[in-house]
Length: 190
Image (cartoon, rainbow, N blue to C red):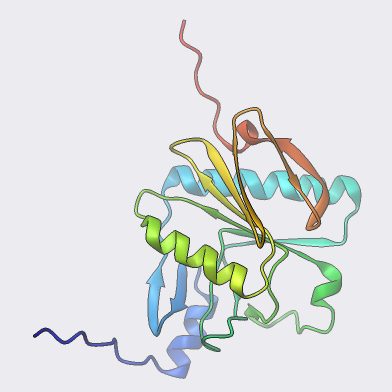
C-alpha cells in the first residue's frame, strides 16, 4: 500500500515571500507554480491593456491588477491564495484596505485565467469552482489554442469565439470588444 505524503508546511516567512512572488499560488497546503508561455503572457498583457483603456475612457472607478496580486479570501483555507492572470475589482470594494498589503481579502469582480500549455484541465476546472464558491462572480478562461473565451458566472457558462463580443458586465460595464482582439493577428495567406 502506498501512502501519500503531504508536503511539509511552509514557514510564515516563506508564505509571506510567496505572497509577493508572481507566478506562484498556495492551495491545498502546497505551493503551486504558474508558469506562463510567452503566448499566454502576451495575451494577458493585451487583455490588461484593453481593460485599462476601458477604465480610462469611462473614468471608471475600477482597478485592474496583474498576476502579481494575490486573493486570499477562500473559506475552506484561510492561507490559500490565488493569483489570477488578470483581475478587476471596483474601487469602492477596496476602500479601507491598506494599499501596502500583498493580498486582497475580498473576491474580485472579474478574474481572467489565460491557459498555458502546462495547465491541466482538471486544475483549471477546480480553480473556477473555487472562485465561484467564494464570491468571484465573473471568470474568463482564455484559451489561446482555440482562440476562445469561456465565461463562468454563478448561474451560467458561455463560450465565445472570434467576432463574438465580450463585455465587462457589472465588473466594468464600459468594457466591450471582440474576442479576436485578445489574440495575435493570424497572418493572411497569400
